[in-house]
Amino acid sequence: MAPVLVTGAAGFIGFHTCRALLERGEEVIGLDNLNAYYEVSLKEARLALLQEHPAFRFERNDVADAAGLEAVFARGRPDRVIHLAAQAGVRYSLQNPQAYVSSNLVGFGNILECCRHGAVRHLVYASSSSVYGANTRMPFSVHDNVDHPVSLYAATKKANELMAHTYSHLYRLPTTGLRFFTVYGPWGRPDMA
Image 1 (cartoon, rainbow, N blue to C red):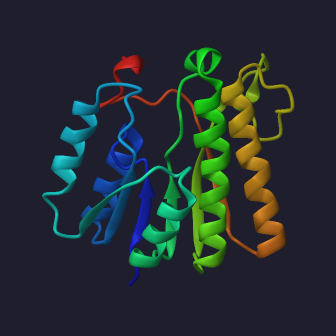
Image 2: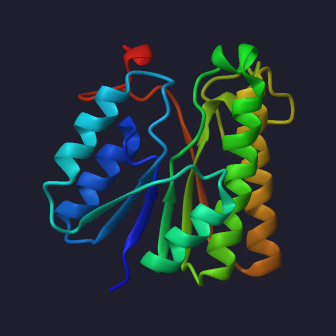
């Protein structure tokens, strides 16, 4: 069976996703740019644990680097992609908007194109509860209006949902978006503690 590509593999959710896939016998290609949004040493420690598994292979690359990403797809030929790489954090987007445009919009477009041309059977990607904006109705529902984001981060995640929907429609690429709420646990991000 072809490998699964997990982007953001050194991040909190990516790390746990890779571990779960490896435990069920999958071959995993983990991709991450190891940016300094938070301690790189924590990301390296997560990767060290993953690299103990013989079915794990690490690729250091930024999803915004189209040529580099295309090379990863050509070498690994994944048939499923779990896209968890993104510039996270609502507050950080106020000071560093370009990081969000590059990673969350350009990078996601690159992922979609690589999936389309690489015969990927299914793309699962991380969206965010931030797309609900200033919605106050509880509990949130997938049917709630998400057309009024209140941060650039939320806007990029809403854009990802629209882009994925369009690729599904135009190119028959099966996609599933996951609107994560607050995610925490062992090996978590320091800013989420």
